Image (cartoon, rainbow, N blue to C red):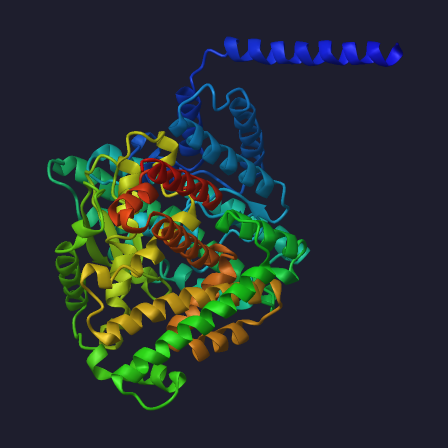
Length: 607
């Protein structure tokens, strides 16, 4: 009898809970689209530079102090709030497209909230949505001080078309000075607790900082907008702006760089660590495992990724041997790498303009066959540009998307620090990756897609973005390039480079590898110059886990294509497959796999 009463009570309670949940859903008058809009407004507010990059000008006069305590507490509060909001909806209330967007938003909130609970990580940054290390906020690459200088030159995403634009930039620089104050404060705390940069990275930052100190005013990068006024400004307006910029640069900005330089030289460099990976920091092992999840959207362990990298290096090495033998080179791969680094025919340029022209010629050749692989192509244009001199020595080639309204084209930046030693062996693969059909296609289509909520328009999931771009490199023969065996070997070299990343990134941060061991492993297995390899290894030291995304993402997309080809046979349409990959924005790999599995099933059901 007692048991029966308990069962009846349990049924009543469950029924009551279900009724309450049902009533909550009925009383929920907000559409999911409104939640998406609120979420994107939040994302823009916490990352004003990304808002500018996406074409939203309301935040052009500010920078988020993303390492401040108040900012971090705000993020924790808001990500928790948005997870609670998403809990009010389910798949029966929204369209399939919106439900997928909900799941992406949920994944983003959960993984960012987890990062905020980590004492080393602050999961917000103005650079490509990478996490920041609160007590190590400045690096030699992908760091705010470099990005701000890029914007300040007047040729990037920060607009300089009106008096308001010029004044907005000065206001944004005021926030930049505040960030510097916080950065120095946090780095002092880090120095006291042993959470500091590797010494090599600190050394690399010093010339970057000094490049804004020991130059005449008119050669200072931040003065360039004054040398390139737009049409329509009066002489009076130009004189006022000129005076304001001169005063700010000389009296506020340069003194702050001097302060930072003295701090880095006198206080920070002496205590910078001699070790190179996260493993040697407090909570380093757990932090790296979190970063693996963030950057790969998988639950893979560092050991699994390390072994995968070793197997991919071995596979690609065999393919390289085949091409080397076809070319007729006698000797081992390591000798062939040295041969390629020094082959004069692969360093044909004497002017930077010739490098840019070569990429434009590659574009013309690909354009002839692009329709055979893609039904979905972007409206946005793009152009190739040389990387700015101040960051060229440490920079990799990169793509910066155009504005959403099309007023600014996408830019493929190419570093050319020494044109006479610029090697062309990677040019075709590099173009496929950074431009067409790689980043330019994927990122432009993403922000042009009106079926997606706006929070999915920016770059977002690196494993998808970079995985697609690396997969795009493999399409060269289908697009009419790689006819030269050296260029095909260049593609294999690029793929090898990404496979090596799996090995050296996990080696540095999970297996106790030194910088020198990682450099030597790369030298032994790829044709990159020693200078380029050193810059890359130091990049992995600064941004743990990020370099894993390329190969993990590429392998998943290639796996899904093979699965579709096998299942659909003669009915497989490569154009439709690529549309399925590209028409939903950047997805965590688990959601991408679900989507393609559903698409394959739909195609089979059409029989």
